[in-house]
Image (cartoon, rainbow, N blue to C red; front, side, top):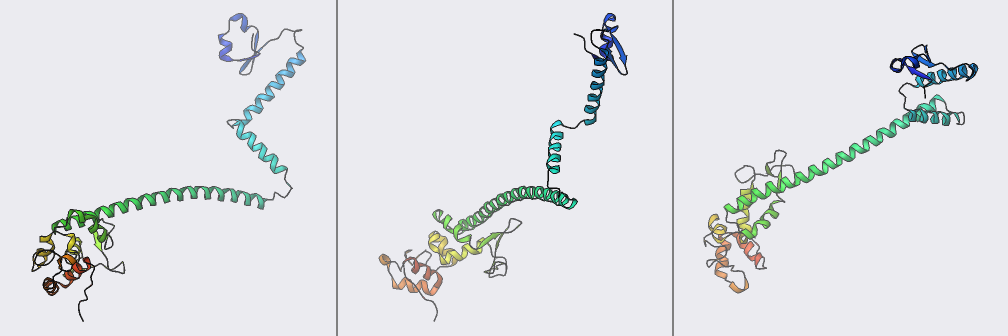
Length: 266
């Protein structure tokens, strides 16, 4: 079946006997319908309608049919309004639409930002625990910390130390801002903290490091015999007096371990 309208390339590919059935019409070729087969008026009407439809289609260009349909629906809704669609209302509607889009984008960005902050906070906490734990563990081992006391030491140190923005260990005074210093005026470090615990919590350390390292006259974590003279089963007033005179703080710690309290000073 022959097409009513064909382009130049299609026309050129037709055999000569079929080309005779077509007539040039601008950039196209149209099939010549024998007189009497179809009334000329009908052919002219068909041709006119075809050209009109072609022009309408070309007028849409690259416009998406779905977008065109949606635009027409919006136009109909607008025209079906109460007649009060003033420029002010149109402007307000446009501003509301823009505000809604901005709010949606902002909400999405805030959600993403909060997620990043949470992740950073978690990573910072892990880093802080690692830095504090490593520093205290190293200092404790140098002072003879018992392996079973590592967790205890770290738990005590977490209340004293923080990690600054550079990843360095720091200790602050009670106000949370002033750097804490040791007796020499230097920054208070893990070593200073552990040395203090050797006196106040000697039970965390081995006998030699827990007493000899800090100048205990007995050379043990307890009295002369290496036991706690405040404990019920090893109670010894002589050893108590000796320790109290040499190291009052250690005496308080040993007494506290045995469930007793010592007041130092009048």
